[in-house]
Image (cartoon, rainbow, N blue to C red; front, top):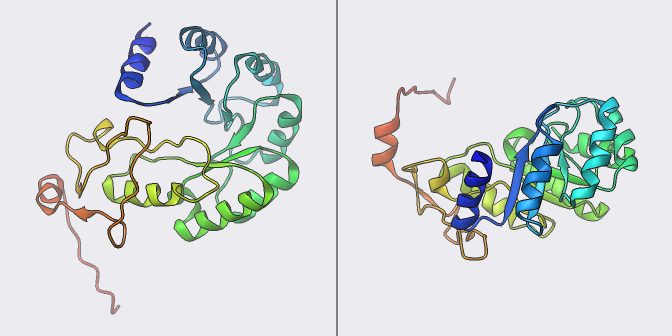
Length: 229
């Protein structure tokens, strides 16, 4: 019931999708409970590589609950096993940790290992590679969404810009600034709109500026690097 109360609070704040972390022993029953509470909410689960192919009956059982997707059920290097799982279940498999480059995305799509990809710029080496993966998925009819890694407003602004590309058609992990930070180090901060979206900055560059006063308050150490060396 603690989880239900927390989820109700986030939904009251305007979030329109629920993502539950699952693991063996904490999976089917909690999905049942959440789906009973919110029959029509967008609901997905993230396994963070907690399962193996013999656990397929669990994922077959989850088909009953109308999940948006199942994120990274198996290990990051188990693209082949994901390709064995996806044809057996109706729920789209989404790969996250398995996708470190465009090449991984090509392999996953060719093997039929997933029907959705989570793109995290920090995981794939930056925004150029993230854009390449987006473009590939768009041509192959594979929807993508933007995952988050607790970025400050600087990284968040980049993610918001990335998520404005046309094939980012599923709700992402980019939340309002105040979800994780009492005070951000970039301005303006991001706030949820009534329709659960975030505004894409329109100023030049990332569209945000560094709040140097806040940055100074939270800085623990500094270092100088000479680019001429």
